[in-house]
Length: 186
Image 1 (tube, rainbow, N blue to C red):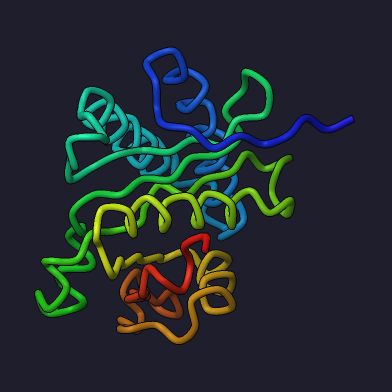
Image 2: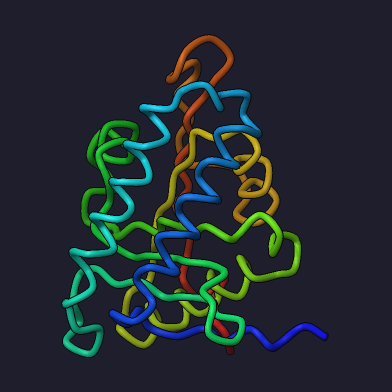
């Protein structure tokens, strides 16, 4: 019988479990894209996410920090992550700096065996609800993964910006600009 999913703030006791989510999910995402042989890129992406998690670990969500992580947990295990932080370099470049003042939904990863169970949607709703509480009206996100882009187009609609062949022939990078009210719990 499946245990209920709980969404909660990042705690130091969940760091190792969150790292496992990054390692397994990012590796799987690269494999799905046919990029599983790019071991250095996979390692770099995992290490970047671990560093982001560490940098937000000690920021206090209640003091309206610019960055925070939420976790989806089943029992004592982290099965998904999501973050909010100032927008990243790709978004700044692709929006020609028009979205620099908008925070970014990022690090949305769900363990491969837990995907397709609505955990990602739960994390997005929890993040949007927290943003609404803080008076934040919009967020942005981006993706260069084709698989994720298809999901995001269904969830968030047409992208705000598309960079054709950004990562090479046939590999676009997309940016979305979203209204918090459309995704927050009522």
